[in-house]
Length: 213
Ligand SMILES: C[S@@+](CC[C@H](N)C(=O)[O-])C[C@H]1O[C@@H](n2cnc3c(N)ncnc32)[C@H](O)[C@@H]1O
Image (cartoon, rainbow, N blue to C red; front, side, top):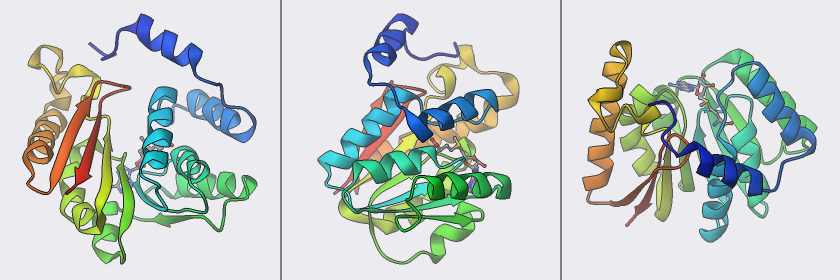
């Protein structure tokens, strides 16, 4: 399947969105050229809207890559803070550089390390948590994430439909079966979790939005 959204619709939405400029545009170009997966433009816009609706002041992100979505969150908040976790040191270095160029060093902290180890050590509560790292690991991030989320906070899980493979075995590539099974389990869990109200949205590669009751 590959693309979960009708290509015509996706193209229309992308064309109608205001285009990014300056450093963010450079980051999009860098990501495309170097095959770094960053949030798709329509997902970035959804993140901005959620951030604003929820009057978000604090974001915890799992999966920084080059810092693109961390910067999107920061720009959508008024004096908000982002903590973002990334395991690859080369990515951490690029992200920190981009954040510095944007003048957002005081607002975004990038922590280098594996999220499953870092998350249980974090203190405080966040208004919004964004899971955008290894798809097969989301379940490992979940209980810490729910603990770290404020009541009334939002958990956003990205890429949850994984090129359509999660929805139907027909699309599953053999070597991805473990990730797909784990993601199905994760989705079932957050859909039925007593503390969460979850909506699964077929945008980008699938985004689950959960409200903590
Ligand atoms: C999809 S990219 C993140 C994109 C970024 N959120 C954006 O939209 O700009 C996923 C990143 O998660 C990192 N990652 C994967 N598993 C991780 C883990 N267990 N802990 C921390 N980072 C992880 C990868 O190295 C990769 O850079």
